[in-house]
Image (cartoon, rainbow, N blue to C red; front, side, top):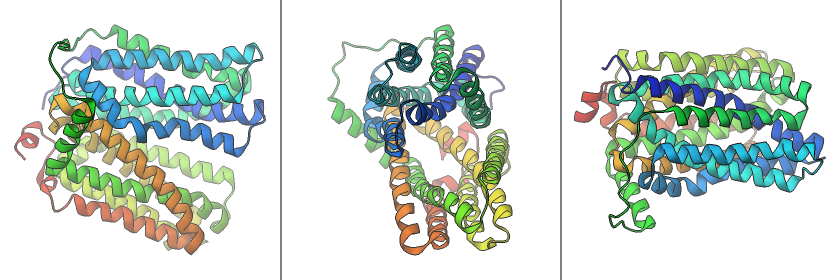
Length: 413
């Protein structure tokens, strides 16, 4: 494995920019609905719409973004997305200062940011292998995942402090500035991708999207990964819907205690991110993926198994294990996709995968609520855990089981 990134200085710029942006995103995810509720007298419906406008674009536009990214410069796509998100977010504190902020504007801002984030994420996932180099993709994803995990804690704390001292609407300025930091980091990147040949005849976007899907489904490793992640994410979303119901109604826990338990989960995410590569080097990559899926399912199964008296202990242990396994799984799934997908279709494969992940997450949230209502919280958690564990069936029998974290073996598998 290469000791250095292919473009170490440029990767560091990308990493720093994305770390700052992750903190800002966490601030706005808290501050934007807070503005709706407290500054504009919004309702729970308004908060739900704001959330939906930020995640539905992933479901609807993932493949579209993939086609675009495969046709255009990935760095330029990210720069344009950052400019658009910067302007959209900055419009909120500006409108607030002029006493003209409305709920409709918040809807537009959330929708614009959601759409541009789809294009940014697909481009970023397709650009990282270029800057990291084939032998350092896992290391690159480890660093980005660690930053995201840290931002979950630091961003939440920053959001509270900024809203307290600046006010809810002005706190959103932090997210706008984080997009500026990301933009500057991309502008400073020196490496340039080969220019896109705009004279060559291309098939229609629909045909290109189908070609990307064909690559995804024809490779046994990619197909197994997508099916495994789809099933696992469905179960995780189901369980996530029921965890708070378990904590408050079954365990009788207070919000403060529950917050501590979720903070422990973030610690697990950070630990999983920094040890993911070492775990895969100790085991085979396929076994690492299977173990991560099974640990996630069993972690949620601890909740109904522990009983009311052990509810707090089980919640803390469960959240730690879920955070740990989720980081390990995400890093290696993303790295594997980046390593074995032909570069010319990487955008389309990433876009389709994002649509699957967000789509199953949406379906899982609704399904979890339905199952919990019909059969109860504890049986619902058991069902969710079983679904998560079944995701491993798509990994263990296939070619992934003997792949090690090594670029040469990945190519030969």
